[in-house]
Length: 391
Image (cartoon, rainbow, N blue to C red; front, side):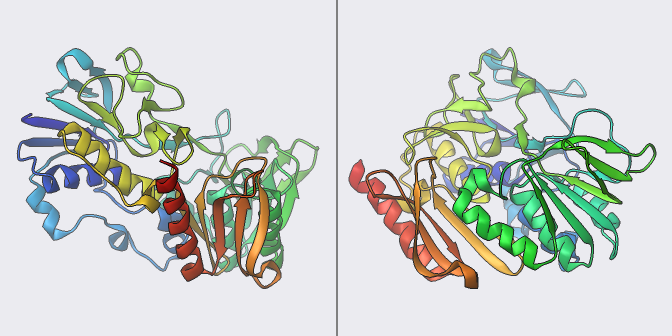
């Protein structure tokens, strides 16, 4: 193996590039990224960067040591096809990059509302998205957040802290119900309410009002919420359409085994675009988490190079965090609809607690901590140890 093409210039692609060198690969590496920016950290986009406490320079993921990677970067270039037989990646300008192996790390993009949108309607996925949104978040402006996931929750938190008037629209009964369940979702609803954010639950968006600039959001129950700015946070779509016809198995992303290997030899997929078999859940799962983007590429590169990769047990447990209204919310494991929630430390009323998610047999399968970093870390490791015993 003398050449590897990494398609994706964000965290997972950078991690894969570093892993290639760390694991002894000394051949040619070409990294293709559709953004003009060098790799940057995405979690602060909805928090510190949006609040103005971090700059573009603060987001940079590359370090001076990364010059030693000796990778060839194709930034601002988009992959349009994969010729699997020749391991060739075709770019939007017609360039064909031939390699012995390909790492797919194309990530995901924000899911938009249908149809054309007037000015003032934003999604938040990229640095350019965040720059545009930050310019619109002026104190006193009326913001409507559509979508009750983590992006929407964090934007609402940041905007309320900046002095905006915030409405939060959610299809479910409470924010984050899908990710954390109704019990914890009610706690999250309380955080929004305590900050003066108005919640509109159990309804969707019928349309956006305004021609040149947004003026309101029309809900499915007929109400209209005045708006100077709208943020749409209704999920993400994996960037895999360009792989149609390549022979890869595609199903909500690129289908891979637990090591990131795809249905094609010498092609692996990592990060947000990979729908991978997870040892912890025993099934397929596409994870859009920072930790997955720094852990999965290491194992996938090891598989490419024929090496054995044995991650720490707790790295096999899905993990993410969120900062909202001055609180650190951490979650590890995998919640299923039949889980019961048990508070084992602290008190949700004080926004300081640890909760276990128990399966029907009473065994813990996930843990959530709010401002409980130490005890959360212990329980996260216990979940990993449980997986080791089971296997």
